[in-house]
Length: 202
Image 1 (cartoon, rainbow, N blue to C red):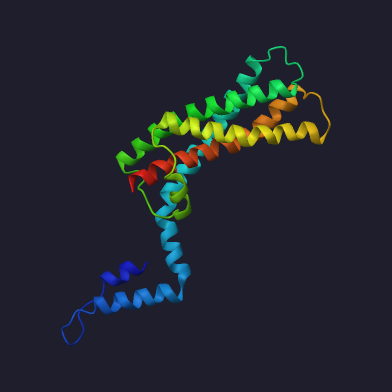
Image 2 (image 1 turned 90 degrees about the horizontal axis):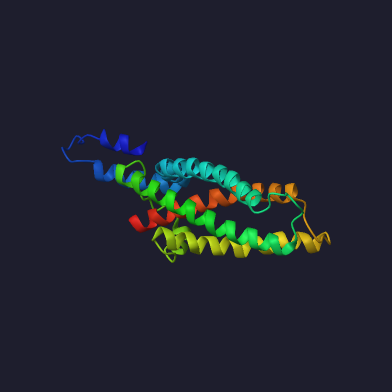
């Protein structure tokens, strides 16, 4: 918005270029009205956020379907799920799904960067600092995220057993719980993987 105005600045009556003065005024305007500068940065980040949102929704949806199929394949009788089986199922599916999603999302992100669909932008300083500590190789990144999510999700689900004093969980209740966190899990994995590759490209 301000850049367009800056381009229209013409030399003053004294024949001197006033663009430097206008740039100074524009800087003051951004200081006085920080919302304008923030909106400008957010506009720059929109293609990245759109890519993350689209990829996250697809990853979350696929995660729900595949997670449910894995659970059914490991329990075709659809019997009640004891705590031990729940832990094994959650850990395995978290690691496998995280690895698969990371491999596909990494390839998609690299193609988008190469095509210029998205560009690395410095809009996530905190994420940059944290994500730069993660490995860049997709299979390593997928395993790290998978183990981290498994370590976080498994105690939460086990907490339901102790909270409600249950000895087992109905199969459909277990699948329903997995469907809820699978969507969030898929979106977060997509976001972390995309931002990690963007951070590496800066």
